[in-house]
Length: 313
Ligand code: MLT
Image (cartoon, rainbow, N blue to C red):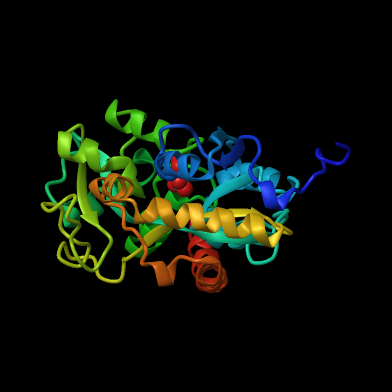
């Protein structure tokens, strides 16, 4: 029958595998969250949701490419607080607008920030760590996943807050950065809990504090920044699924439903929670809530990050 292969057959979607672009290296926090939700979404959509890692430029390379893909539901992406919140503050020529270039599908997971260091870093607690990072100056190496990424934006915020000027070492994601932290090649980073919780528990790296008001059930021994004496450094990242703008409504609804089902599934939830991630309540995770979040995050981060970046060597 002629016409069956038309571009947007919303009623029969999906008829082939869906690519979910992860804009950072495999094995890192975005990749971990994406693979957890993609696995369940594949089952309810009846087609594989295949992860494609497109790395570089703090996640903006992959998000730019995904934003420019056909809005047919066969290319979606896992964005986060960096790519869809911090990046506009730090990239002059950003080729997408987090609030305008996408159809938001929904939130996937909240990921609190943990201040982590190589396991033999001498400081016994956060106060001693801050003193060591300040006095060490450029001899201290701080890892991050590229300008505008979560680890970069929360990292320069930390440096500005405590008055430290370490050497920044860039990676294609905090997955590879974590490998170097475990090997003692870099000194510290501020990273999303889902990437580092197992290594903290296993003792291959150390955690000085978690930047949330309450301790995490996944890391009950790690003090909050406030408990450890660093007030006003509370920051949590979020990870969310977006599609290029212009998705047929039925396709958007199917993706939203599949993501929602994944986050209602006990096994999927447990995988996120066990890593210290949080699962947003249903009222807080749909397209409208995500659109509001993106707009408020861009507005919130832009002045803060421009100020912090100016203070960075
Ligand atoms: C990653 O997956 O590597 C991270 O989300 C990077 C970051 O934004 O720090």
